[in-house]
Amino acid sequence: MDLKVLIERISYIRNRAHLSARKLSLLIGKNEGYIHMLEQNKNFAPTFDTFMEILKACNTTAEEFFYYDINEYQNDREIIMLLKNVKDEQKKTAILTLLEK
Image (cartoon, rainbow, N blue to C red; front, side, top):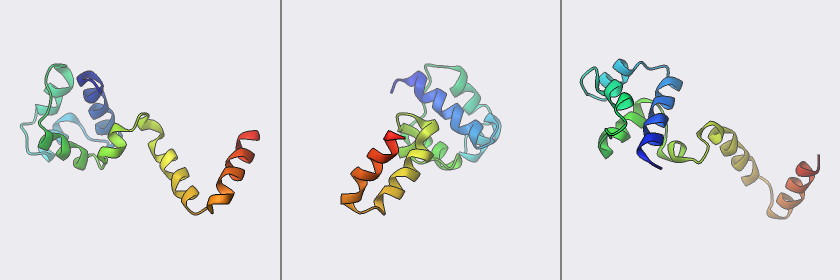
C-alpha cells in the first residue's frame, strides 16, 4: 500500500467514525492541525505509534484497515464467522448452492 492510499484510508476511517480532523488530532495527543496536515500533504506519514493511535481512536483494527476492500470488511467478516459454524463437509455444498442461485 503506498502512502497516498494509506492517507486516503485514514481520512475514510476518520469520516466513518464521525471525527473532524481537529478532534482526531486532539484524541491522539497531537496539535489540532496534525490530521489536516497529514491528509493534505501526501508526502507526510505518521509514525507507527501515531498510526496505531489513529486506528484506536477511529475504532478500526489493523486487519480492517489493510483489508483489500475496506468497505466490504465487515460483510466478509460476518460471512467467515457464519462459515465457521458450518461443518466442513457442508461448506462446499452450501457455497455451491449459494453461487448457483
